[in-house]
Length: 75
Image 1 (cartoon, helix red, strand yellow):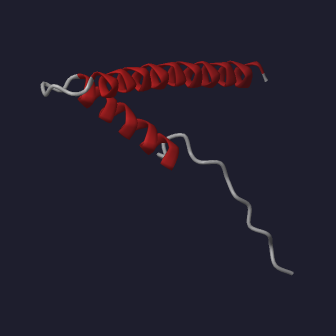
Image 2 (spheres, rainbow, N blue to C red):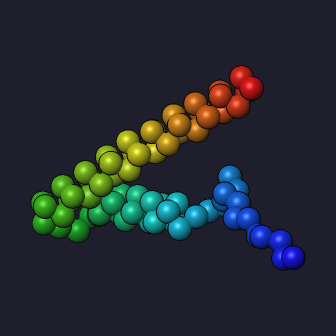
């Protein structure tokens, strides 16, 4: 009989597509905000909100990782 292959969760150090997209959006928003070229105000405003949203997302993810680490230590 064939053994079923299991799918593991991504390793902690392995970069996922989600991480690459998040990093690319963060770099793009920082470049737009710091651009010396005069851009339309709406473009700069969207970049600022995107940077803010990515910062909040990163804070929430680090809080979840910390909470999971605390839960693992209790076991």
